[in-house]
Structure formats: structure tokens, C-alpha cells
Length: 335
Image (cartoon, rainbow, N blue to C red):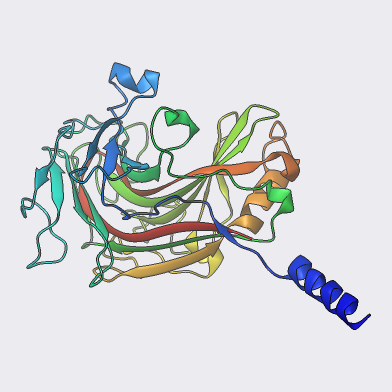
């Protein structure tokens, strides 16, 4: 009887103990190798193709990619190895590789016993057509790129989870430089007449039963923060969830302040962090569930039918902006 009770106690302990699982495979910077998306204006994008992988000197599996949506000068599909080039991070060190064009560059320092890995993302919008949105994001290969190594597994249904934590460490390398070309300061105009940059975390939710997708974003910083644009919700302030797409695929933007987290300093008036690593740990599950409940009427509300199967982290812009971000870690853990 004593042995039987002991076995029952052990089984109950396992049944009630907390579990957690990372959704990311070889979370970045990982091996330091990345595929590259075609420009959105390139035909291969419509066939779910990727270039590369860049930095794959050791035949390491590359389950991640760098986007270059709407770039005005494509990154090369081959890297320069063991050279400093245009890279700004970690002065006095040499990245394992970089790829550079007139509009952007990517530099990679793989993880080692002495230091964490790092990916440098840089953008230059000096010749970007007004009204075009140029995004340079780091993200895992998902089902969209089914012919390439996967970088992420799909979560359990949101209704079955207790938490979904996104943890990442980023640095805004200086306050972005905004030049009046498409718009005029403080860049409150719309309709393509604007110059501004932003940093963003994105979590991609899917409902395969209904064929719906929701892009949930946390706006980490914006060059218009605290500059007097009345219609722009400051990333540093507690603001309501804003829906920027009310039909499929849906899109909503949140603020780090709603998580009691700091923003990134992307304007001289912003109170956020700059030139220093900033660690985020955001339990996005309550926000995702709330978005389903209070989203557009056409959005399916059943949390048991929604999963998370994608994410992205990086910088974007319209008009003339020069900016850089360093990414040292990114992980998503369900529990």
C-alpha cells in the first residue's frame, strides 16, 4: 500500500507540475546563418522562395531569414566573410560575415563561449520611394517557406495555454536620423507624405479552421514618439490596442507600456533606451486572447482554434531614415 500511494503521488506531481516549451528552433543568433527573402517586387516572393543561406560556411542548418520588403537596393545573395565592412556593433571585433547594399546591411556574430551572438540590422531610406514601407526583419522559416529548414513549431491552441512569453534582447544603435524629404517635421502627414522609422515585434496567429490570420505587433519605438503628432499613439505611453487591418489578414498594434516595459528611444523627445541592450519578457497570451474577444466582428473568437506559428523582430520605415538595431536573442516559450 505504501508503494502504491508513492506511485500515485509521483503521478499526481507530474500531472500538476508546470511545463514549458520553446517554439523556436535554433533561436537566433544561433548558427549565425540566415536565408534572405526576395524583395516584395521580385517574382520569387510569390513562389515562397528564399535566397542563401548567407553565412553558411559550415553547412549549418539555417532555419531563419532576413526580410527586405520594398527595399530600393537588394542585398547580395552572397556574404563577405571575416571582414568588418560597414558593421557598427562590437567595435574592435570582426563579424563572421556581412551582406551590404546601398539601402541596408546585415552583420552576424554567432554565439561563442565568450559572448552571445548578435545580428545587426541597418537601413538607409535616402532613395526609398515616398509611400513605400521598407522592412528589415529577422524571423523563423515557417510553413510559408515549406521547402526550407523550419525555424519554428506551431504552438498549442491558445485556449489550452497558461502563458506565451516572448523574450528578446535588442539595442537601438543611436537615435535614428530622419531627413525631411517626403514630409516635413514633425512628420504628422499621411498618404505617403511622411518620413519616419519604427522598431517592432510581431507575433503571427493562425486559425486554420476559418482560414484567418492575425498579425499582432508591439511597436517598440517610433521616430514620431513625443513629437506632437496628435494622431500618433506614442510607443512609450499606455494606449489602447489599435487595429490597422479590420479584415483578413487582420492586424493590431500594441505598446510596450501596456506590459509595463520600456520603449526604445527613436526620437530625441522619447524617454526610451538607446545604445544599451534592452531585455524584454512579454507574456503576450492575455493580449492575444483580448484581441480575439474585442476584435472586428468578422474575426473568429474561439481561442481553441487559434495557434501561433510565426514571429518577426526588426526595423522599418517610410521616407528618408537611417537606423540600426542589434538583436542578441529572441525566444517564444509556451506553458
